[in-house]
Length: 301
Image (cartoon, rainbow, N blue to C red):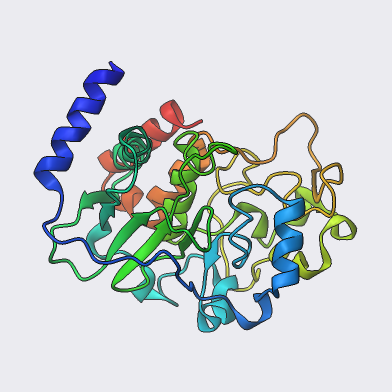
């Protein structure tokens, strides 16, 4: 089955690859809000104590590229009435997967895209060479790691997915981290930044590297509404030791017993519903509401 899938992907690459892929430099400078910019010393400290590839880029909350303007409004969460330009037009996201990836890594990324396409009415489609706004899924060398812009940024925008190396799988040990970054690109924030998070988790600020405590800021309750309960299992939730001073000092502790904090395996049921709700998939008709709720309930992690 794996061999067949590799052949299918290789054929698709030959048939759908755009004729001219935009140039992507090895070193890029994604926007970082003024309050979240790090010195070289702070970056080294982060790398020494937090090996997770979602933390290593050193962007806002680790892996989110935001302008200072977006940072000023980030607590509004996912409200298209405030930032309508961040929503992908017609629920369609054109993309290019870098030819620099090995075929097996391409398959990992492609499977993540297929998952979102199957479970939601959002459709990732190969870039036709004409669409102005599209994703460049790329193994950026600096900043390395897994990171993405939040929502539609305009023009070609990078989703950085570092491939495996001698130290480990990095962003492509499975589909989960790709899905995580693609959800950022759709406009979804981290789960633990919800305004109501203190009802569900305790943030141990004393265990967080001081320079990164602003990564644990909450969204504004006044400007944010939630249609779904807090999701410990969300693919968008921080792990228990993100930005910790030491690997044995948790930065987040769940108030509910016997739950895990975040995972990078698959869309949770709530993640799936959240995307469908955000992009209006549940409001198309009674049929669509039932269809996507059944899909999310049956196939969500």
